[in-house]
Length: 172
Ligand SMILES: [Zn+2]
Ligand SMILES: [Zn+2]
Image (cartoon, rainbow, N blue to C red; front, side, top):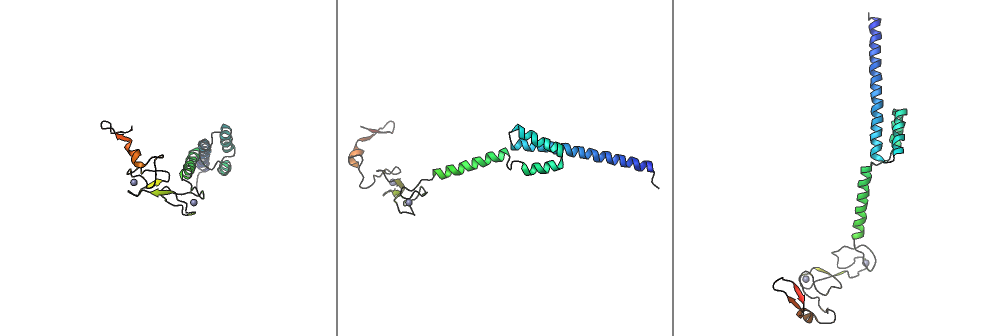
């Protein structure tokens, strides 16, 4: 038969182990809650309340904390704000059609919605130019039928002189 003294000792050891385990679990839950709430809010009052709740209520306290805690960590919140700002910026950067105010793309010549002319193609190189431009910035070909501030294109070009030394264009 089993010795009753041995049985009592075994029970004592098991209880001690169980108690130690529960204490360790209790402490780690409090530490976990403290770390988690610090990653989610900078409010010291909320941090103290959340940690206290876990310290007093233990496991049920953690469950309540999991339900009530802020859904995003500060890091996630920051990333989220950055993404939102980038999205808004991208939307603002898109040009609007002057005819119907819808968003149009830079490489479009005509608005597909209201058929307003947005850009014109260069006669020589085919690259897109803004409508008010009189000369193609890519190849230097003057736009047909355009006049440079009252004078003809030839007259305007005659006034420009290439500086041999610096390679700059000067107006004389
Ligand atoms: Zn339009
Ligand atoms: Zn051109």
